[in-house]
Length: 372
Image (cartoon, rainbow, N blue to C red; front, side, top):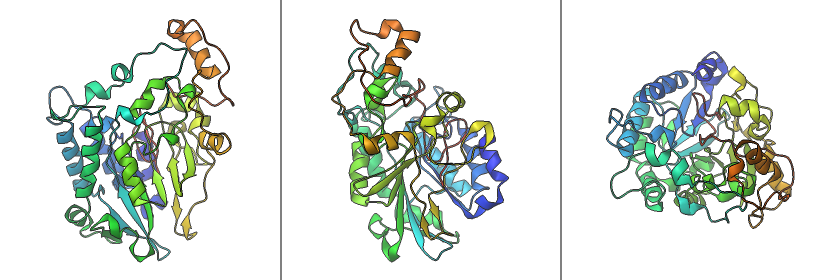
């Protein structure tokens, strides 16, 4: 919350658009307070929920299930003027940018790469809190592709009437009546989601402290929608790794605020470019488009995307990286199999932290970052 409040003291943000790619808070009161602060600090705020936003209290006070909570989040956003639907935004340079918030959720079959060897670890279903903290109608099950598909199908309801209602009375905001008109008038196109649309947007399992989390990071339905939409830039979150790279003609960006312990322990794998640092070492919002300069900002350096710019992805190499093995030797030697210890990777980049918290381009509270 301190990070969000610090942005209110910057008058320049009032002519900017902020993208919040989820995980603001699992608590409705904190969610509402945080978005109110941000909505008052920026010219416009767009939001799409992350997994933690959809956690439900056992007493049902924040919704009967996670779909009910999603509806409550959308109502709060609408009341505060936060946009959750596709809109075309007029820019000061005379151009326009279409912004598409895309609902998504992870499913285990997204992970198609081999498991690592040399480690005995519990499954993601046993470790990832979403399996207990989210609740869904009987036909939808956390971790299964049917849930990811259901939420992706909800994106088809966002253009048209819902977008028109949110844009009403907003200067410089024009609702999209269909995704097909996102490029009309020569508009640039930015989409954003909480989860990953491609497996190439996370380091291979051998580099991660907890490799099974690969099965709880992405969505194939989201990937298919991305292939159809073909944005100029897609902003994503959830994995707490700084990223800025082009794949198949689309630029993918993540700038994670992350947790205080992650910011202290592995700042190099979080950093994207030279974004200024604010409260508690947290990065300030990363600029993606600059109307004063007439277009998208140049790509930023980020450790992991730089690594993959010069090293091919080789998931068939399944021995854990040296720093992963060192972590388990030091902290959980019982998780190591009898064999192991062979060198498996290049470089000295840090792995996935122990928390399963998400990273975003745009987020707040203690966990996420921001993009503008």
